[in-house]
Amino acid sequence: MKLIKFILIFIILFPLSSINAEDNDKRNKITKNLRCLICQGQSVYDSDSEFANSLKIVVDKKLEEGLSEDQIYEYFKTKYGEWILYDPGLNKNTYILWLLPILIFLIGGAIIYKSFIVKN
Amino acid sequence: MKNKILPFGVIIIFGIIFFIFYKGLEESKIYTPDLNAKKELPVFNTKEFFSGKNIKSSSIFDLDKIYLLNIWSSWCVPCRQEHPILMNLNLENNINIIGMNYKDKLKNAENFLKELGNPYKKIFIDLDGTIAIEWGAYGVPESFLIYNNKIIKKYIGPLNQELVDEIKLLIK
Image (tube, rainbow over all chains, first blue to last red):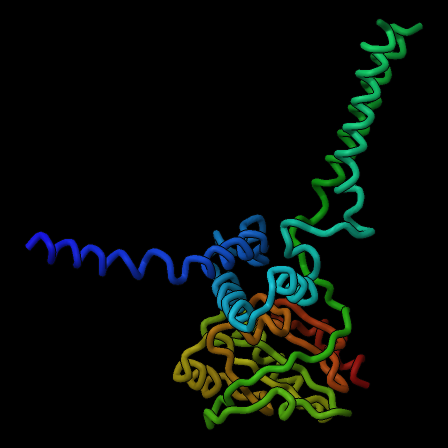
């Protein structure tokens, strides 16, 4: 009896554990980085709108076709524009976004350096 | 001297910040993709609406003809509102209206066309919404003006008389 129980547990748990895990991880990661255009401010992963559900299917299809993560982002970028990505690349529209924190860090560092170290 | 500059500077900085945020309030926060970007037509396989036959996207659109691809669905309320305008536009003889039936039940869609008329030269179906994504669409209704296998202009939301006049002007 114990053995049957054990086998049963094994059978139930085994298929859930590993087979599709990697694919799902990748799909979740990608859909978390895509913005939903219907419910703006939500990611495709979080959203349950018609658009987001279709988008999830498309991501699955593209993964099946063997496209890499970057290629999938590129695909959506050509369809909907840079905005759809939560993690935009560095280009002429986004350079302020990328460089401003570094700039502020440097200015802040300079102020601290001047007021504390130079004074002393 | 230093005591005077400090409060003055703080007021100016807060003034600038207030101005920027105030201006930001007026701006629309809703993103819409570029409507005028000229793009190649996507390639896809689909099914014909009435016959259920498999068709390729390349067999739907010919060169040298003007098409209006309209994404519609029987469950979409604005589509119902837009429909008479499409019927009207169909009277123009140099434009072919193509329908894409989006995530719909065949029976409901047929009833919709029976009730309101069929302005479409051809209709194909998009059951899971993936073809709409190939087109860069994200809702219903949406319309694409197509010439020489290129998307010339995109209209998000229902067409109205003003936009139809614009389309008529463009296709002349």
